[in-house]
Length: 480
Image (cartoon, rainbow, N blue to C red; front, side):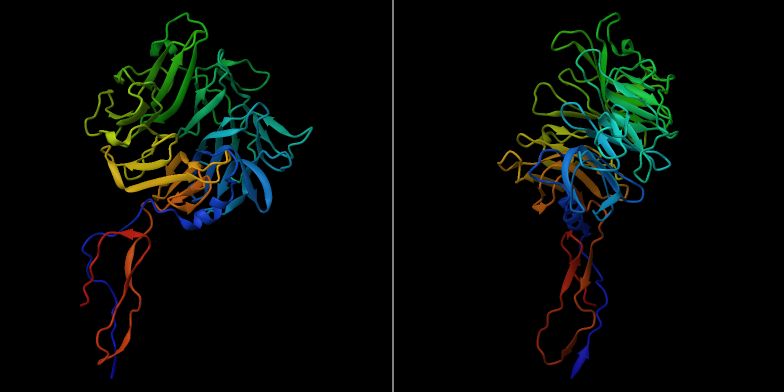
């Protein structure tokens, strides 16, 4: 006699199952991860996830193939499955057509920062001279806008954003934007190494010391400016210049910034590190007065947490084997609830971001490159569930090397994206861009068959339970 056994569900699990957050998404790796050329230099420098799930990667000029066409991409948008969104990519190939970011000086264009306006328009900033809107051949059709451009949501050039862009430092030649922060009113806070802005080629130069705010139309917001003397720069010095790496807004519209102000013509130049809170008009709020470690070389990252506290990150000058990362109270005092795991050594984050669950992604240096991506918990301890290692086997130098993670972000839903120099991550082939499952992929237990039919005298039988989705943790099954 045969009998059907209807086994519908797993009734108990001894420990919670969870998706392995550092699992590389094989679908994304098989699509987006195959667009760029491994044996060419270049890597991702910025990443932004749109509300519709599409992913923008900014980079220096990366050799790529899209639809069989060789391109040199510095800005690419992927659909959520990793396929290229053919309505939007900026190609600097001399034979390309359509939108392209241009840079005619030595080197190549680099998109260091991406920002999203409330209407879906996209800000791209970094090292560039502007955008071409047709084939990159003479006479061409170019909009010259140093360091910053804006695109419509569909990828076309937004010609309502009119600015000549940045001008160089008065000494040293730096002329780029490192990061952008979009205010709720869609004004843009731009930080980097520059000496000022021009609204147009016919407009006067408006001096700005590495930080400026732009109106929605691209013009300089003249109501916002900093005073270097408020940060300790001596009055009357020559060649005064500023470099800022990140800005972050609090709920009141105040602006936290990190960077440095330097002056003079000597090398190395005298400087003061800056970790400050600014009022909306750019003047310093002295009620936030952190004491930076004496051996810190600079402060590179800053982000405001939902409760108003601030997390900052910077490398130490001596010893040069560790980094400094701290949580600060609104008055600048150190919050003892956070201590960075000392085993991590030197860590970087570009930019420093808090994920939806209060964790932070950091790249660590185990050798000569930032080849390991880790995550820390809200208290600064290492999150054991996330550890990713990059390799660059087909390196353009001819010898396999450790890869490196240059930029990374966590999407609102928990998925993690990263980009830079590698052609495999955690053993999965993916070139220069990668997606991790993060904390999003559901994990479950299921029967291989829910209604097996067996003979009563068949002896022992095997009923199999399988995991769906990458998951970890021991589990037991109640066969009731």
